[in-house]
Length: 310
Length: 310
Image (cartoon, each protein chain N blue to C red):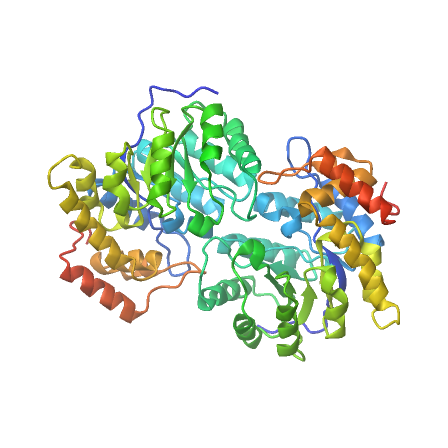
């Protein structure tokens, strides 16, 4: 299969958008679209909806397809979307990926099947290849999702090499959420000039990533601090880039002192004055009031704000 | 919610039934029912369909519901079924569990949501409680599925304690696939006289489990060696029980020299003379011919047979 090379690729800062739930824990499409609009006007170049921070795996495929459809019909440009479409079940991955391409999404972020551990590169190659072949669309852009601390199923450099060789232009990049800069650097070095876009999985590595040819970052805190992170992306060649990077790293360190997903939701609930945002689906648990209070007060003391949210 | 106490519980040997796939990797309901019938007439007291060895997480909820429905309508008694219904997504777990109860299944085997790692017992409690409450049926029997080597999300004794206290009779037992007899023993000791049925996750521990008050085993090799395993279950008080146990342990050790799921499928393909059984879904990979040849020859040398299969 050949890629449609005229298609523009997403670059810059992407948020793995948190998912709002109603009191009965059903996904809330209106709140979701509202937060997506705020992100797009506040610095995000794209939206990696249905990622780890979106509690994507805590939702059924039907629930996600409904949210995706509603989001696109609410006016968010599909070309800016990079939904997570990788599931344990081959059939689920095919269905979600097909629908994302049909709606015109700029790319898809694909987890490996993550139930079985210690599986072979051959088995993972077959998984991605089956999805690509069954979707069979030149518009498909697959970004591989390497997040071994959560999935416990790593995506090796050798596997990436095989996938790029077989599907050049279709296998378009990676999100490296290993938290290990030496791994990101190895990807950048090995796959440069291969039309393979490396995104850091945290803004902590954004400046390093850009200086070595990376294309941006897809980061949890993009949900709450997109403007400042985008400034590092836009001004990485400027003299004060290291200072800007230090600023976003400091904010990240405050947020990640507690559990990341409930923390992001608590921040949006607080600064957006919208308590229902605190809801998480099991197995996650919301922050305690004490945790939230101390998180918010530390953020405020650092000068953090979310202009235009409330 | 109160359980229907008149309902008989499953005891004995259960197979986590392997799932046959066609050439296009779609699930094959006819082959599946055929294998289930062979298992039930060959020593299995019940069928833990949609377990780890069933590649359950490699199938969509729709695919599993179709197989379940076809199986029940093929004449397999629903009371003998203990389908896996635990998913990462709360909504998927509710849907599968509700349907299993509606069809009259004797129980359900429930994985914890397994994407996020290091989650709290509170979060896992809420997951199981939400499923039980939303299904809201006195016929529901939940067997917790503790398989930390694969799920990487353990079910602690404290969590079980909370669940039994809140849902006595509904939370009916556990499959312990930790591979750690001291953990199984701790469950047996702590929850005896609590109407909580402990199943060993491997026949290697069957005799020990029965001698300490356990109810049987749910074991991969139940797919190929149900008769001999059932003999240990039926004759565990006999003088030759240790000898019978040594026999099934020896067979297990031959099978688990290679990857378990493709091995089980290769054995059924070979002894049932039905090559299509070898198909696995990615990320699994079938055995090489060399692996299969040496597995089969070692089994034959040990006197292994599958009477009535071909």
